Image: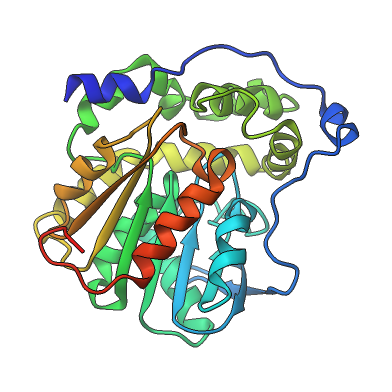
Length: 319
């Protein structure tokens, strides 16, 4: 286990910030959902406005993004799944084009946001695919509404309070878990790209992925007024999340679960984590990828997820 935890952070090397305009000059593409997707805003139970886009037709699947990104990060997967799925892609509260409330950043509350989105778009049961902070929201959602999730896929992130969580917290590589509050906000104001660059580069197999244009794009969404406060709040809620998750874990999930890790990041430890909370786990490790699977190895990640969503019911973790 110790070796697995250490492997998560093996890529921690510094890399200086990129110039904002250089990437655009080089013609790099930025992430985006298909232009045919329709956008709307859904009110969460506490009144928070959740921005969501959807498209395609067929069985519904919800894609939940992580930190240092927004819903556009799902572009490659959404473009593929829309061929035979209804794809629902929200921005988490406080991120992207969702509103920035004062609170509610615990993942149990955000599970209510996701439920409001699913119902507002006229659906009941869905599959769920998630990455990073999105894993934590997806787990809370699935544990709260287990009869509403047909399949769950999680990508490269821990679950607060579960498995090796305490070991992970002790590693210096997760300094950003405890970097929040008014002083942190003032330090980062106007320097969002520098702060986020440290996270992108630290957890990538190569510092050129995500590319500079993508980093610029995401940094702009976090630099709006209140954006960094909301981002920091996702981490500040971890103590509450850990308590909630330990209560959830008393009943293991029974639906098929795909646990996907990047070889240069969580790797097989993602499946070890999920086996703590789920009875039916399929493991996948994307070779050559760090944490940012949709940017580093999109074709490989999409192929694994598509196979999982279309696979027959599994027993004992085997298809």
